[in-house]
Image (cartoon, rainbow, N blue to C red; front, side, top):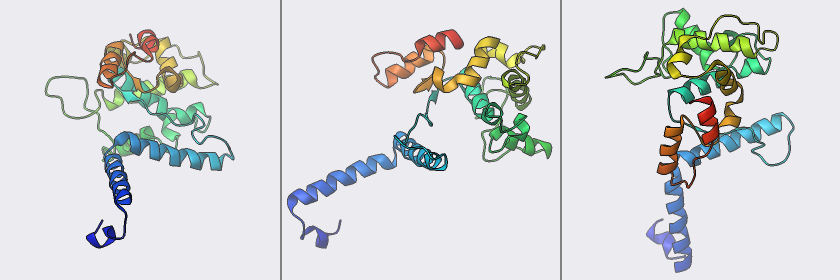
Length: 219
């Protein structure tokens, strides 16, 4: 606010402007506020497209902090398999607007997508920044999981789930639950119990939310 504009305002008005400016400054670097604004915009657009009325959230869009590799893998597969579960695609590689299709198309020409986090392999010392498993492991994981949840193929798969589940110590039945009901299993954060406890402590929460789901599904 310039000096010239201040002289036409009462002291109380100037104080109100300064307080409002301070709120706006905090929101500009607050990722939670950014996600709230983004989700509201997307949810309103989706409600309009589907001719829905009522509260704009409509239970459509949620955000959870992913606290460990198990939660990361489950959430990635959950999102990448959305079109398959909705019967909008027959296979993960033909599903539109998914990261897995983008990765597959890039891999076919020997490239790595620049706009997506790269796969860096199994966790190890001096590990580069990236996803803690390999692309072939993840593709196999999503492909086999899609066969279990697809209505025409449910329960017909006889071969075992890929080794990544053994490394993450997630049972087969629990994995299917995670990749079909991820948003109902976890609220604000997802991960093993120890990571949820640390998250609750950092967020000054009095109790650990979704502890039962974490113990049952992620061990």
